[in-house]
Length: 220
Image (cartoon, rainbow, N blue to C red; front, top):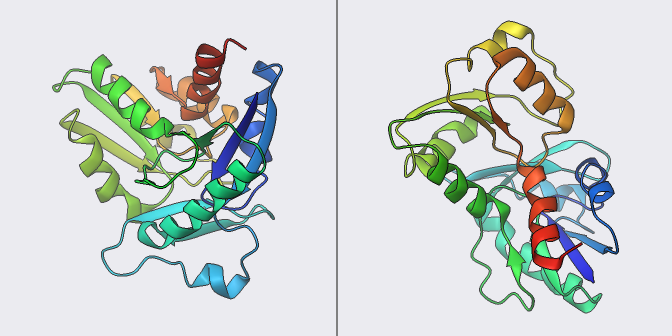
């Protein structure tokens, strides 16, 4: 089984896959990134315009990159075609955002869409949801997405790519939530551990969903 992993940044994404792949066996991995092969100037041109949805990812050198969603669509289409040409039978998006890639030559699993419907089935509309997102600029757009499922939302921002580690009081602001969702695929197991330790609340880490999906679908 060859599975393609598609990042909106640059591949490879060791920071994500090194925490997923040890749980899987008999899996051949192919990676592609929307920004693979682009120059610094080309990447800079992808910054979001006025009113455009903002996304954040990681470059190959570990630096954070901020992009506009609309500008990524053609680049993601090219990347998924590279996965297909390399022999991938399915692809998994390493992002909690969602895209309409209607011309994709292989199935694209979008964990963010699955995650939100799953959480929506767990929490009632009257539940209390905590969100951790990378950027201040993303708070309103992500809140609007989650409002379909729950009304009471509290959002904190913490980039998984900047090496920041807030103190206990920062995390405790979410200790009144029924559930905390770390809404970015870049958050690591260490981030999850800190949120659990300081909030004492259930925490959902999106990358855990990937290994569960692959195991269930392909009996690995």
